[in-house]
Every structure is written in C-alpha cells, then in structure tokens.
Length: 222
Image (tube, one colour):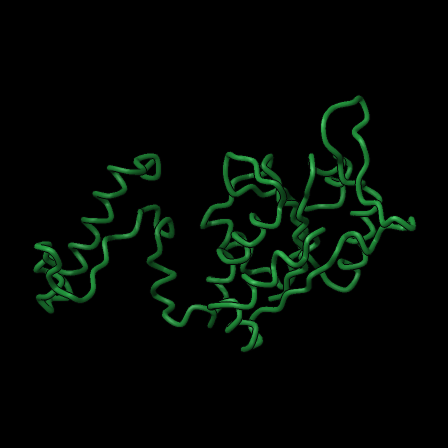
C-alpha cells in the first residue's frame, strides 16, 4: 500500500515513519510513503501557499490553486483515494480504518493555519477527523490514520489475531491482559488465566470485555 502525504511540514513525518512496525513494513515492501511538500507547487518566487481570508478574520487560509496542483500531479499516476484531514470530517473509526486498508493508494492532505479554501473539497473524496478537537495542522491526524490503517495490511502485524481482537473491532473494548510476575505488590493474576483451560479463559475474556464496555463505553453496545 502506498501513501502520499501532502504537507507543508514533511519533516514531521520522518521520525514516526522510520521506527517500529511502520519501518519494518516499509523495509518488507508492505508500505511506502511519499512526502510531498505542498510549497513545491506554488508558482511565485516566494512559494506562497496561503493568503488572508475573504471577508476578514484571523489567520491565513491555504490556497486552492496550490493544493489542487499538488493533488492532480500525485493522482495522475495512481487510482487514488484522496482524503483531507479536517476537524469537520467524519470521525475515524476502526471500521473506516479497515475499509481504507483495501485501497492501493491514499493521498492525505494535511491542512494548516486556519484551514484550506473550501473549494479544495471539489478535489477530495472525503474528510476525516480523529476527534472533536482542533490541532495546529493535519500532520498528527494523518499519522494516526496511517497507523490505524497499516495494522490491517497483511503482514504488518505479525500476530494477525491481535488485530482481530483489538478494541472496537467487535464493538467491545479489549479484555484485560496480564504477564509475569504472577503476583505484584499483593495483586495476583486471575487464576483462570493460569489454569490452562482455554475454553474457560476465552469465556472469562469475553465476560471482561463486555463488563468493561458496559462500564466505560456503553454507547458501543447500541
């Protein structure tokens, strides 16, 4: 799977994309990332990518002509799904991450300043948000989306069952997990997990997942 990351700050991605599972997936040829500096598509000598908003107001707005050129040049080489990271977008969910993992090429547009000219929406397939709050730019949301989607690419996560059983994958939060030592500061690992009875362990895990979901996210059960 290939990602084009359209951004004014490509350096923000270099650390996260060169560590942990994402790096391993790139090394294995499962994922690839193209860092595209939107400023390279400005046509004036100052490489201007934004301007003051019509009608007045605080901040600057990213220009539609510059963003359109960046999108068209990247999209001309692929059959791409184009996503604008935006607080106005539909909220990213586990289901959406799984859906996007079926795409061969994603173009993620990272807005900045006060956002992008509204006419940019004519050149995107959808807007996606990672939550009901505002960040300084779309780079961090894009990283979150990449990480969520990458887990569904076969081979990225070694233990495929861990993806299937993640929180939200089955409308439940994940069950509690324990490892060594079996007792720590008076708190013991539940006996059922030490029993070796796999049927009883599975039943306990399902019960705990349901209990946690009822307590913390009852909305998911609807």
